[in-house]
Length: 367
Picture (cartoon, helix red, strand yellow):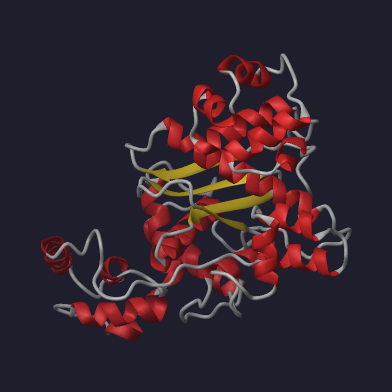
């Protein structure tokens, strides 16, 4: 079982929440004031806690910020601990602040929801005891990934839904739609003793899956890597080995190849949910192809524009299910109202009711 975090669980002021919602929306104080038909001075005073907005003003602020008034009244606030980002250098501080605000809002809603269940069934994450305490080579990183798969009884075949697999082991998987510029590549952090992994909501599934496995690598390898190893390279190696163990690579490709056919890689991409480029790396990591062959494949991918967008049908995105399952559980047991359930889901009550009736864009069975 996980324990709810005690770090920063203080009464949250309305001023803090107004500022966080504004940052999440990517607005300046002046822009928010214009949208809410207030003065910039009034917004500044609200955020500094010098004055409190009236109920009517809170409604105007909520509408301007695309949130619900309940957000401003939520009783607790938390912080991300040990955040480790995968991001491009061109990702601005403003964009990063928006992503963090969105993540914090989602985690707060999850923890508030979890507190409704006296004996909740969310597991507590822990790296298997059988992972080496000290890792000094990338081969040991590969072995660590296999150790985790074995400890979790995953076998060596493709993992059907990685988000579900991670949530079953005590990780909270979140998606964010804040940044669509391809500059944000993922995040791993903790809240109390709850590990959080974040990927882009609109990413293709192979990118999501590799990022989730990479962030799992950060959590498993934390404190184990020697200074000689590059942490990002180690987590990339972990991700590749976790998604496609060496035995699977050799089973699919053979023990040694002089070349690989792109169409062959495309088929494997859709079988394992791992990009064609990642398959090239796995073939090289396991010695199935030489460095020269890998370089030739990189050149081929570059010449055809495949390093940016791979050919053919993309892998479908994954959608974490734990949070919605808990919301529906609480609603069915009458722990919360339909309105509160919609607030937890972060959508209008009309949209939530459509979803319950299997109507609307996300209302079909199985979604």
